[in-house]
Image 1 (tube, one colour):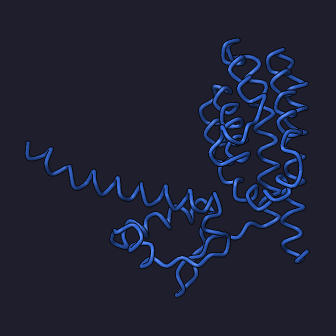
Image 2: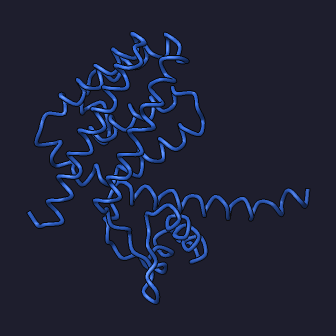
Length: 226
């Protein structure tokens, strides 16, 4: 009984640390904490009503993920979204998506492929968070259907980190017609349900390349002040 009771503070401590980390990560990925924002441990400790220790642990984890940079004698800052980093992420994602399409065609069941029909239409009222949340859910589901745990985890982590760049270009999506992107999803679903590997790979590559171009254009405008 004593050992069980003694483990409770440790479990609570781990839960607090994980909560602080997950909330900060979500804030950075969604740009609620915008790139370049200065971060102070004391302010975060007050916000989460914890000591500085779980805050420091969370910031160190986020630094390893590339979401935070440490500044000697100054604290921390949310990492900027650089054009080079965005290009690298889209290049890696295109390669992973190609492999994922092949595995989906080979291993996903007919029932699982039919479930993708839910993503053929986008109704803003049905998605709390709008198109970005809908889009992320679609690509998360594709990653899961690939049935490769390592690839799934890499893809989902990459998709989540890329959301910062997508948020920056969100105004371009809003000014355009998101239904054209939904149509691209629908065409990809057609290829997967028909189990045509090459077509699914080609459509996925085109979809990712077009998204990369939108994001790069948006970031370039910010950099040059357009």
